[in-house]
Length: 306
Image (cartoon, rainbow, N blue to C red; front, side, top):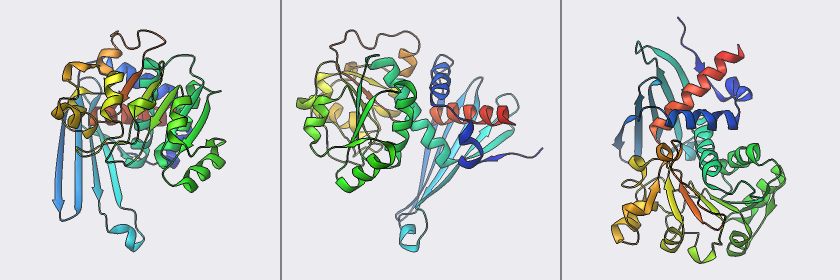
């Protein structure tokens, strides 16, 4: 049997943000995942392999090489793929391009968090950052709130303006003022020091933090975390691994008990927002179990299109 190799061009026309968010929610109503990460290094070059096994969904291993010197030679710095294995037999079912999996997993993770925690009547979204993730966030959020008013801020205003012009958004330069006017704030930056301040937040907002993915990175300050009802996509992959929570936990600015739930809790009936005045904050940390759930959805969508 030929094992399919699925690329963005092959599959993306058949994918739907809401359907993937539904698949992630369903995945979190099933057995918890067993996960494991491995890092290999050669100087600045890195190989990251992330694996997950969920009873009933199968196994996924996503391996990604990061070679920082590649762009100087006109090559991408990141290459990778996800291997999807059958749950019953262990056979390889598909090889899926890393960029496809990561793009759809990341934004659908945030969309699911917002569906569970943001006010249903949200009318405005501020995206902080203007990279590739920001573009997918526009698509994902519009799939659920089609009439939402979206603005974008970026440290380099020209990039915000380019994204705004290509997607019908408003580019803003006053970050504090824009945060204060938004019902949802989604941050997808490479910041190592907080760019969002708790003093800027207003009652009723939902904050979606995406960018930080290492132990040294964070996007929101201690005040933001203390003012909000805190949630994460996975306690296991965020609290002790990502600076967004690891740093304030180590400093005593928040406690582990301040994190009120993750997607396993929320998708199984745990309380999220308690009123229209709550500020909710959600850390999108990714994780191999989400790669597996996304890979399974992608394969099913491809099979259904044939």
